[in-house]
Image (cartoon, rainbow, N blue to C red; front, side, top):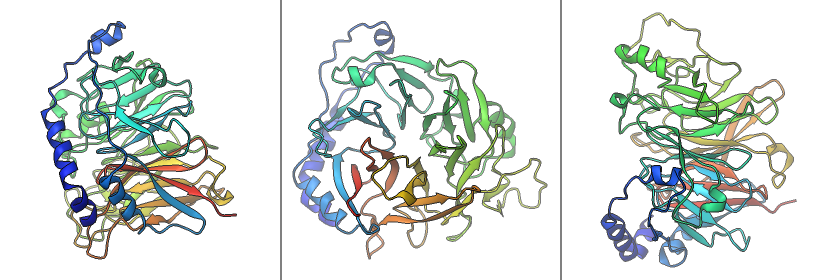
Length: 418
């Protein structure tokens, strides 16, 4: 990363100043919901070439992959978090933990983005981390405390004014008094039942006893689902600390999700988790368990009042497992079909950093899962992060995109072997 920073210092300073001086955007949702113009005309367009991009490419030379695979820079995308690939394959929408959603376009289909600009710049977003698409092309964006619906995002993205509606009004996703700066990166996916599933991380390291009833009622520390018109909200999953990635098995339709586990218990415990949910209402152990079968200090010795589903896979402690997707493409070798590709963001307070890699999890016919490293090298020999993967998404050609919010980039992993 030293090479990347030193070679782009002036560009980064200029970009940061321009970004910081951009005036606050009024919330124009009411106008857009009525198909009215807001008068907005400006986009923020991100330069895709130059020293910064060259520095990111240089770091990618360090990444190790299985034989036959290669990784390349796909796009420079500031603060890139979770991704949603449009069903028509025209645009990939990328959320952030700030106030931007980016539209990434590969116009000439050379598998490198030609244009990155902000999506719906006439709207004021608030931690729009989680975009997801329905099969019929409706884009949903899960924010800190709102869910927005864009019925024709792939059609309107070229305009600063985009048809936009509330799915869940601001302040109604969770009670406003429980809004927090911590664990507010929401993600969403449309399930095989046609409902939208949204994760709601609870804001504490370990949820306090006095908050548990309220959290249970609203699905905080869980995953909720609702119809795609916003009706029929219910809590589907309980006992989660902070899940920032979920997807549905392409064959069984079961929900699988990552979960970030408790800090402050040491470098090597508790384990991170990939979980498998087989029916509605299951509980996955937080706050009585810190990760896997490790009890939290705060609840140690107390009787666990619920039946707990243990992880399908225990991951390395503090590797920070985030976004995940089931692989359904045809580009990769057959062994990867229906496997989970997941991003490990990397530890923020472990003595020796771990993570910052892409994992692959294979699931056998009985549902038993095993994980192994797929792509690594974003931690250098000095223990410094060269990148921090956040999410994995599949392009229509079967290649994978990996987002990185430290480098501010998307990478494309493809297969050229036999």
